[in-house]
Length: 179
Image 1 (tube, rainbow, N blue to C red):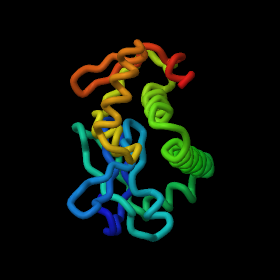
Image 2: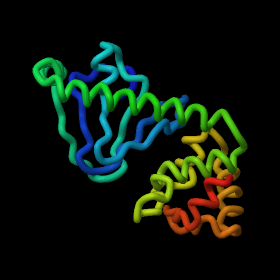
Image 3: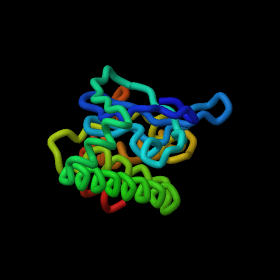
């Protein structure tokens, strides 16, 4: 998917990781990272407008692709699926609003903690690894990478996280929630 170019398909990520970004001059600004179950292109297709962002695969991906006409027909002919699709759109809108609040409220420590908890489902799963790079975290929060490095270093010293190559492990989700 390319910013400003209308796409005739909607893609559902069956497996993999996809980055949504915008170009700011030559610099890529990451807006969101989608994983299994993420949907690409539905809002632009349904609103009949070109996407405001581009997408690129960060890992090997398997996608389910539906043409616009197939999606419209499928939603029209399957009320239960249409309802689930509307719920999915509402959940994604709510998450984007929460992300906007996250980057506009609180200090950087609070913002990083919220993002780490979001990426690990708040410590409620067995996988407490965050696969985002520190640079990607900085871009998602709209701040400089050295600032994120400093905050993550402080969190590591406090025993809240463990830092590794292209990996951050949440050790103390309760402690991050306190931040």
